[in-house]
Amino acid sequence: MDKETLEKMPSLKWIQIFQTGVEQLPLEELKKRNILLTNIQDFHSIPIAEYVLTTMLYFTRSIPKYLHLQKNQDWDRTEKDQEIYEKTVAIFGAGKIGQVVAERCRLLGMHVIGVNTTGQPRPNFDEVFPMSQKHEVLKKSDYVVLLLPATKDTYHAFGKEEFEKMKNTSHLINVGRGTLINQEELAECLENEVIRGAALDVTDPEPLPKDHFLWETKNVLITPHMASITNRYIERALEKVTLNWNAYKSGKTPPYSIDLDRGY
Image (cartoon, rainbow, N blue to C red; front, side, top):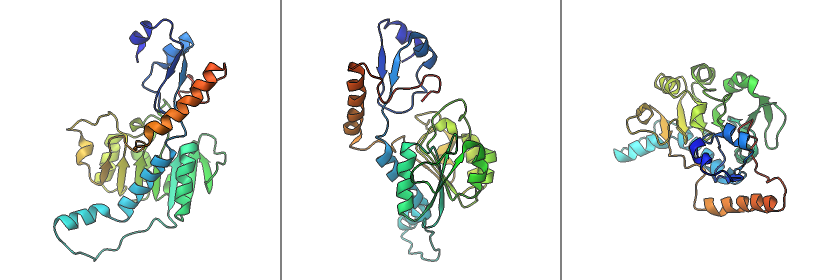
């Protein structure tokens, strides 16, 4: 959906997309024509929370090491694994998805920090900080989870400076947008063991080209933007579209309307 496509639809009033992020749409053009844009929210929480927990345990319980040992038929018990119990996780994006992730993490005995624009408290977080204090948060976090939207303010918000603030034993998990991270600087920091590992469900670009350097970067787990997609995706998505439709046809503002100025 680009400007040229929109010009072919002079009577268009409303666009409904079946995802959360809207950065790929011509928002300025939609604003000029007063076209309503709605997405679907509040249905990613369960699968994304499960993805985050899976990747944290993947690294903490040394699954890559055991896969290697199994492949080589090597019964090696010399190195002890870590636990996520009493570890600190920072969730950048303390909205509804972040709150469900936080709830699951607290059930596993973790200390949970939330980061949002204002630093105002949110449910299920032990502490909440504003984005302006991200470096302070990074210094004390064992896991950093990115759930931020793609905006001009979040573009490459995490690069070498941020990774150097993190513990050298920490892990980064990106389930937000690929543009949140400076990928070249992430690869450099992983190769130099500035941080221990990263799980990337989103990249820039997508799909990730076959010859891209991230495929060969040390201690990276790459998944093809599947954190929120399970066999129940369409079922949950249609429930949210129905809420938008029922509000629209009754003359009310749909619950998942996008602020075209803010981009979310």
